Image (tube, rainbow over all chains, first blue to last red; front, side, top):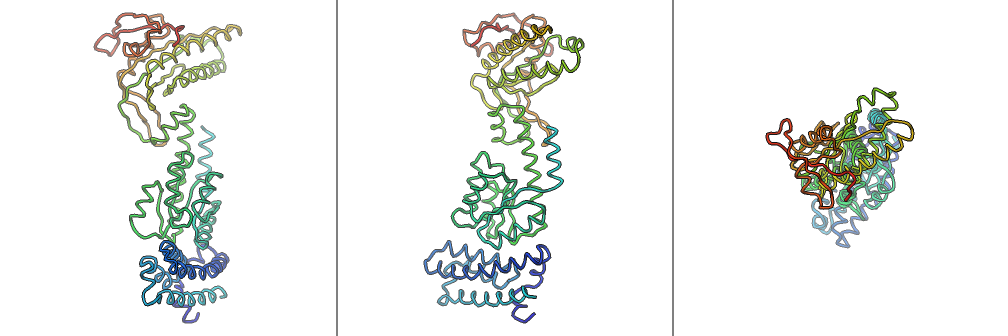
Amino acid sequence: MSAPAASAIDRATFEALKQTTGDEFVLELVDTFLQEAPSMLDELRRALAAKDADKFRRTAHSLKSNSNTFGALTLGAMARELELGGMAKASEGGGQPLDALAQEYSRVAAALTELRNE
Amino acid sequence: MSELRSELRRDLRSGSARLLVVDDNKVNRLLLARSLELQGHSVASAENGRVALEMLRREGFDLVLLDMEMPEMDGFQVLEQLVNDRQLRDLPVIVTSSLEGIDNIARCIELGAEDYLTKPVNPVLLKARIGASLEKKWLRDQQKELVRRFATPEVAQDLQDSGFSLGGKLVRATVMFSDIRGFTSLAESQPPEETIELLNTYYALMFEAISGHGGVVTLMMGDGLMAVFGAPVPLPDHGASAVRAAQEMVELIDLFNLERDAAGKPSIRIGIGIASGEMVAGYTGTNQRATYTCIGDTVNLAARLETHTKVAQRLILIDQATRSALSERVTVEPLGVVPFKGKTTAVEVFSVDPGQKR
């Protein structure tokens, strides 16, 4: 595994997921996440623009729980900060936290794709 | 009952149940459904609370795994709706959420959630919690079925609403004892099947008359029964209702005797004793097997009055408290005071004319 993948995904969590639910199912689950996550990132930006605090928090919450499922612990922790800190947190530094979140997601997506094709 | 028990045992052994997973997030939904399927359950899923309630009201489920944060209708709203729904209030709900904060967990439990698991859900913990919840549900279902068979729908509903807590309370009510005169010699003179058939008809008629007037049969023993009026559901005129039920019981036995007479069988006679007053009423037993009963002096008196019908040569005997609850139109004959065993003072006894209704 390459360096980005190794740090973006906690391998033990990911292996445990495969063990408990089956390799084939995890492929399906990874695909679902890769399909759903970009719209969650969009959703966060839209909620922030529309000042929809409830939607913002809820989306951050979903992203957090999905990230943790795959062992994307850094992404999960960032999403958790947004869930708890709300839109005020997201607006810091002109929306910098959402950019950082998107960057981290790119690393996670790359790592998951790599793991998926292993 | 035995079918029910074997069904319960089979279900518990196979551990298979029909579950509903409610989560707006597709990854979570798939993941949870997968773990549950691996545990041998059959699983359906819903993406929000509104869809979940529709499914719950349409199909039968054994348990719900409910996320809290959802669009359209969230988990709290679902819990609120379930607790106010007579059909669904006993359905076990395990909350699966990554909601932070102990107050959220407390709120879920207050709203009737059986358990709370934080996401990502640990499969071993999940399995244990589901097993425990299902076992509780099946025991509850079994109790409900037992109550349904032995009580009126109204009483069964009341018991369900108030819960099956063991323990008594002091109530004012009326107790009735009834049995068949000379039943032992009758039973010895005919084949056993005929005795059972006779008892079945007798009980069917007595239940009809008793529950028709708001009473509950709390005990059946051989040819005897005990019924209570005014508990567990309060009945404003419990004394008068019990007497009306007794009159109807006598009337139904008369009709039954016409049939027996036509078939060349001996007629049967019953004796009924009724007393009113305070008593301790409640469930006794264990959580698996409980029975509703009443205890106290009033209950003993009703039993003594029933026995005394033989001596007094009357069909229905009542005490002073029951008598004072009757309207003028019911003809009551005072039989004077009778010293009953176990009673420090003699008791005034009255006979009710079985033909006088209302």
